[in-house]
Amino acid sequence: MSRKPIIAGNWKMNKTAQESAEFIQAVKDKIPAKDLVDSVVGAPALFLENMTGAVKGTDLQVAAQNCYFEEAGAFTGEISPKALSALGVDYVIIGHSERREYFHETDEDINKKAHAIFRNGMVPIVCCGESLETYDAGQAESFVGKQISAALQGLTKGQVASMVIAYEPIWAIGTGKSATKDDAQKMCAAIRQVVAGDFDQETAESVRIQYGGSVKPENIAEYMACPDVDGALVGGASLQADSFLALLEAVK
Ligand code: 13P
Image (cartoon, rainbow, N blue to C red; front, side, top):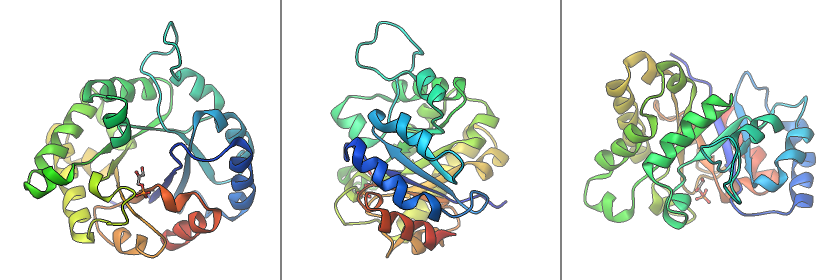
């Protein structure tokens, strides 16, 4: 089965509204056709309205970096998945290690968020990944497998088949120390096995799995050559228009 590659930038807490608008202007006419690759920018919630407007009619898609699992109510400061969907947001990144670590997002929260994102017609990009300590102890596969089983609980096969999983070893994020292609392949294959066990083989063959952690234009091709790696979730190298476009060029 052939899975369409998906490259997603994760800007994290970077850029102003003005800078985000300049970025979209610089890239929007150079995005590869959507039938070749899904090209996504994950931006701070503050800019999403402008961005979904600016990408209309182009092949660029927009992701939020977080949302809450309730649609509305007394949840001061939270981001409604219903409101994101109404803005035309396509994807929501959930379970990033930074959110797990600094904002105490739990496996249960992530699972509820995945359900809420689907309820509101968007696609979750569910992040997982182990610490260096867990990696060194040889427990990466079992640790990540548990994160994925918990995140996907109660979803339908069809939902899982259509979603995106991002394997991001914490020790490779923002460190310049990217995982080897063998490690990335082994972990993405292991995640696919977990999906096959929890759902079925067909679902596992459909779900797209990204590698993330110090991905750059210079190394993306070696990850994309791995049979179980379907794309990348990219932090630092997604911030500049030139390097974001170079990532897409390397994949299409
Ligand atoms: P870097 O590409 O900056 O290592 O960040 C990876 C990441 O956390 C993307 O979500």
